[in-house]
Image (tube, rainbow, N blue to C red; front, side, top):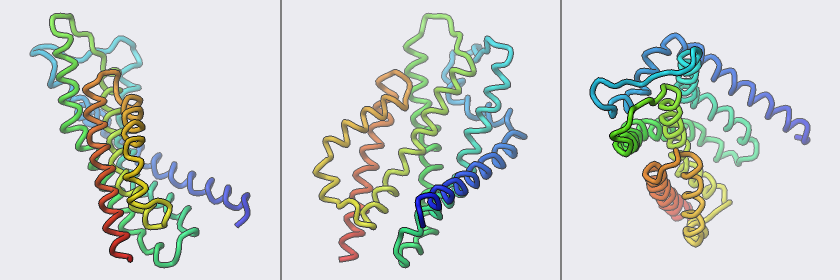
Length: 234
């Protein structure tokens, strides 16, 4: 394929991925209110008794409902988006490598959703409780937009982070990296992970640590999987 043909193929795959997201978004919009309540629950539960989240702009609830639907739609559409990605890169793979499509979709989707669920159940409540307690003694005026931004960044960020073992495995399988190479650069990886965690999380050290620690663990897990894969192949 020529460069223009590759670009045309990329455009087609991006359009199909976007279409799957739009369809998922339309379906999730019908349940936007319970979705938003569910997403905000980890923050709401940390507030003192009798206090609740607020909004200060007339259009704020509408925009947050739309954002909540979009976040859930992203997880719902993940298998379809990953499939379009696979279809774009698969022509560059060997015949036996193209048969990995089902494991790629299954584990890729499961790790993405699993990362979001892990963040929702473990990271968000701990970080929210710490931040709320830090502001104890002051009047609470946390808005629904602020709380949703806090939750969505951690949930989506952790979902992406959980894809790390899948990425490392496939890079090792196609020979772009080796387990030895990955371990030699572990210090650099830790620095990069710390920077990425600081960018993805709210500006507090606990949230950064809660994201960086699993990232390092997932990186080492990916190296271990890659090592077993390469060893089995040899």
